[in-house]
Amino acid sequence: MQPTVGILSFQGDFQKHASVCERIGYRTVAVRNSDALTVIDALIIPGGESTTIGMLIDRFGLLPVIRARIADGLPVMGTCAGTILLADTIEGSDQVRIGGMDIVVRRNAYGRQVDSFEERIPIPLVGREPVECVFIRAPAIISAGAGVDVFASYGGNPIMVRQKNLLTLTFHPELTGDDRIHRYFLENVR
Image 1: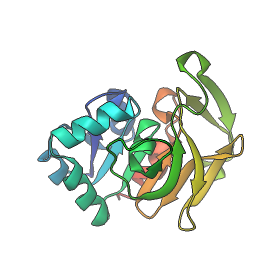
Image 2: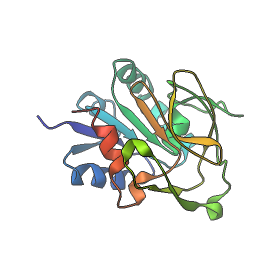
Image 3: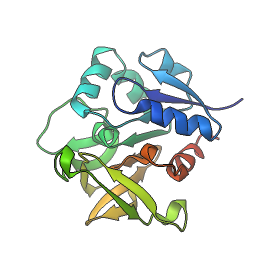
Image 4: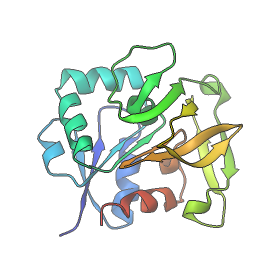
């Protein structure tokens, strides 16, 4: 049976993530309620406004279900705001978060929307060619615990890290034509 990827679909460019997953051969489900979390083999938490997404997953009762699925080994990829939501610590904030990853993040670390940028960054884990990384009001991972693998950095801060079944990126891989990051993540589903 073909694995099903859930895309948290409250805010952000969730449709772009779904398009990438479908293009490389996976079924997708928009996750907006806890029932959808019972039929997925992996979950992607897209970028957007982390406080809004956190408030909505709490309001709609998804927070305990997502945490339980993570504890059971569900592969989860967070991009930008998804990284913030998966972090155990958000500098200067007590906003609702899923947690589970031993990282400390700083919101909007690279500046405001007008300070968004793209950079080609080597990520050897996914291939020899650098990855086009799109940073939009991006967070910075300012520290990572001993159990966190750092796969890529920019400006001295990790931008792609993994801890067990959690993968987080401070950039938006869904906004380029390069599907290597999604392929790497989804190999854990097969």
